[in-house]
Length: 331
Image 1 (cartoon, one colour):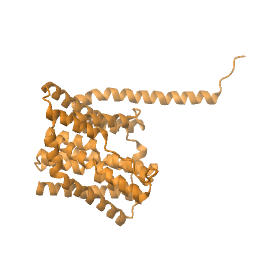
Image 2 (image 1 turned 90 degrees about the horizontal axis):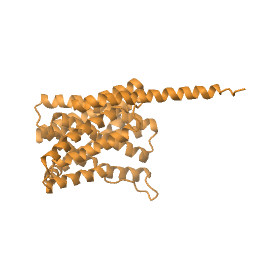
Image 3 (image 1 turned 90 degrees about the vertical axis):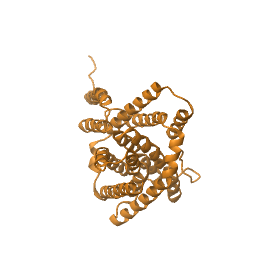
């Protein structure tokens, strides 16, 4: 007599097969969407499409979407360096270094003050303050283990930053055109007022090439502030390595960006190569934003509420207009 299959095992196989089919269908839809998005070349639309697919499926349709997106973004920034030169990067960085420092320190202090007034939770408040002041998701992900954040606290702050980035992608260019901002002014504003590097570069690229170059340079300088902030947080919380220090380093892609800028400064590159690098940078940026959108889930959205939500919104709605005013007034 032939052995009878275990009903429980059969059910598990059927369920697993259904999940795999669902994931494969999601990946197929993503592949169909990427081509038109690359032709369109609008990072904001790519972000929305990726988010719509993920929310419809209620799961990330592409495995390791965040990791792949991060590498796409970093490569795009390195390729962008081939259009710049070290003198431009140095002048921008030196000219606005004090402005970046003032923004970071003021935003951190304001975030902690708002948290105190709103009686918001300590760790999410610190994560949001650092994310708004420095570099959004990167700051939150780096500081979470240092501060001992729980998974849901990290998820909530990341989700809120994601939503604010989406708003900035669509609203900032409209405001820039309404105020007739120059590309330099707009690049400065996005570099300081938008949380994540991906959204900073994408928003500035929508406005113009010069805006993207300015925003990328200033934003990378702002990102470096993560190093002293993590070191201070590690000392205050005693959550570093075994010797009490924090495991931080200069991001490799920033070094690579400076390297590509140095090459462009001292080597006469063919126009075709620079053009291909520029187009590839824009395509990778669109792909990076699409993959960022693919990480959005319904469960993350449901968690975004309460005092943490109001802290993040209030802080951003304070620093973004204030920064805009100062740039238009004194730049």
